[in-house]
Image: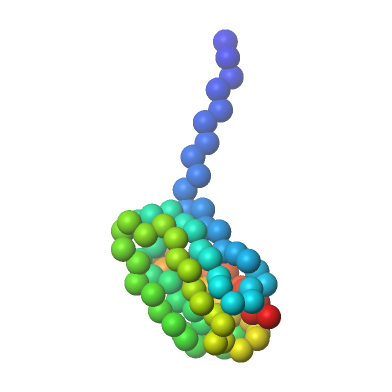
Length: 87
């Protein structure tokens, strides 16, 4: 008898660097999300990006945004929200 472990990673989202200076990078499972929203700390959506079923990464230029707290919302099968800090 042998022990075999199999794991499947689904829905993994990487958002980096955090804190961010200029460019935020996102990596995610293709087809799981249809939209990315960038919101301020009051929840106002500042930017919205539509994703195709093939997209598995996105780069967001934040160089024109003021320093502060923002939220990245991944919208799809479920909604995932990640707080980010812009230096």
